[in-house]
Length: 252
Image (cartoon, rainbow, N blue to C red; front, side):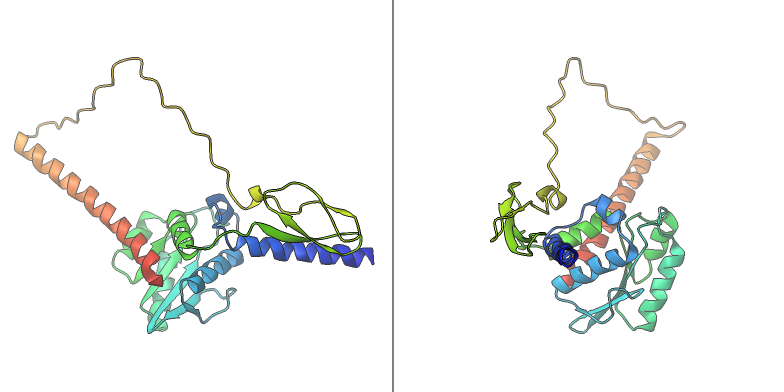
């Protein structure tokens, strides 16, 4: 009887923890420590919260979703692979987009992408989603979802159910008078805020700005060089913002 109660208590704990976790966006270190299956499930649930219809199981190698008449394909890189995703993986995604007659593909990598991959994606119907952009999308999909402040736990002596609060570390008595300790800590779900750092004190004069000097270049050539460098930075920033924006706006 005791073994059955313990098993039931463990199962209730898993269910309650999973229920609460659905309200909280994982931290970067949590995403990177997930299995490939867990990351696919996180992605599939995100698409559903954004109003997409999922046409494949979360354990499938690719996630196929539709919203209205638009079809998308999502592939997740295995977080256990420590190297950035390369262009070969993006070619496979592009081929699946074409074969499934989809509008666009998304490749989600918690480890980033190689320069070769970024070069390939610039002219292909695929979008590169790194860890930071994925977290933004997860946050957007959870907009308006408030973390419940209570959860259930089972007494391991009699099987009675008690209600605990996340903001309390006190054990509660079940209906038969047994003490039941909290089984979930708020810190497991919500990341603590780092303490504010005091502003550094300035005891001396500010360092002189770094001056870039160009050898054997006329003043006109230097201005032309500076304008080109500025334009490259602006284009690079615009491309990155567009990549993140397109992914985040697929739920609209």
